Length: 248
Image 1 (cartoon, rainbow, N blue to C red):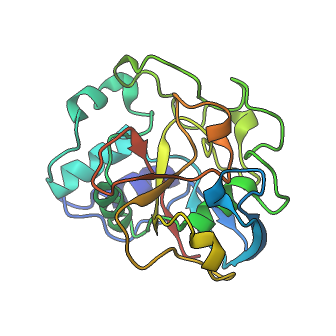
Image 2 (image 1 turned 90 degrees about the horizontal axis):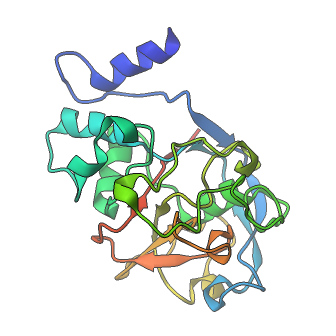
Image 3 (image 1 turned 180 degrees about the vertical axis):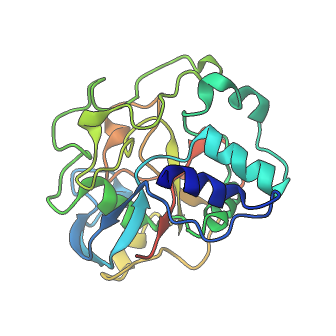
């Protein structure tokens, strides 16, 4: 019954915009320090350091095609590239892809959430014990994540969200490695870690590219590391998806 009420809240009355939506599919990441970055990683992951992040909530799953379809219907806005290809019955529980940063930000705002910061994303992915991947230090296998594929197969390369029970993060979040790259709110700066604050860093105040995290369906094992950083233009509608966060 509760899930049904959430659906009604999303659509509102007579197609009205979504009001306050309290998701039942979020996890609490408690306040505290974690190890951010990696001395064994790429140059933009250094220096490895302790970072404090306030408590926050994070979506357990990447935003799906079905969820994004509800947003488009409610807002009446232009869909992303290849939307007709994505919005098929077989793909409703797969992650929405081809989203630019504006698309992702707008959806999160619609459900009274926001994109996570890069620091929040990394803590949610790897926890506080410095693990390499969401599930630990064991190299990725097909039990852990969707990666290493070569054929996009018209959106069929993506796995339905929540498919990899053994790949969950310490906080019960799925697909933090593989499936689709995920937008975060931070602008990208190769040297940011050298000067970033040690408490609640939010990235540079401006930039030309945004950070994406988590690797994707066509990536290798190294790209799936929780400390790995990549970058993309904020207007690029590449095979990138997202999940939302909010303050508790």
